Length: 161
Image (tube, rainbow, N blue to C red):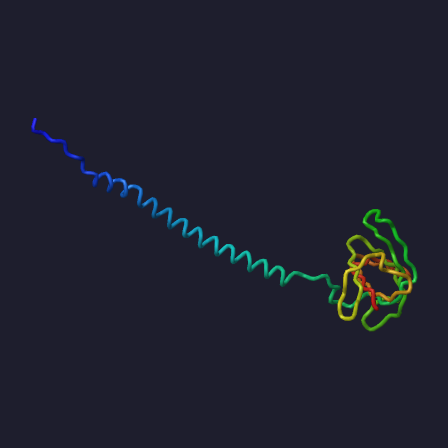
């Protein structure tokens, strides 16, 4: 009966606890730290791409090539948008060094980009801005019917001021 109760030694249990779980905690901490660094790198990459995209995004400008025709609008007909056709204009001018035609019947579709030249800036415009008597430049897309006047679909039109 001389046995006394002795408290158990908790060190082996504690060592077992930290030995099993501590490496997992460290791995998790390292993984979370790596994920944080990856997140920061990804965020930096996305911001860089966004700035590059915004900085290099194409602005709405006319082609760098010479226009097919430069002249005055002598006729304008709205089409009401059936089949993508917005309307048509008849442009009459002179063949110049940088143009190919002196008279053209030009179809304007929903894909045609129309601009208004204001000093050195070209601002987006609509078909409604095209009026008889205005001087315009036009670029064509697709085939050109070689009748007289030529018939073509405009890719771009610039209203000159």
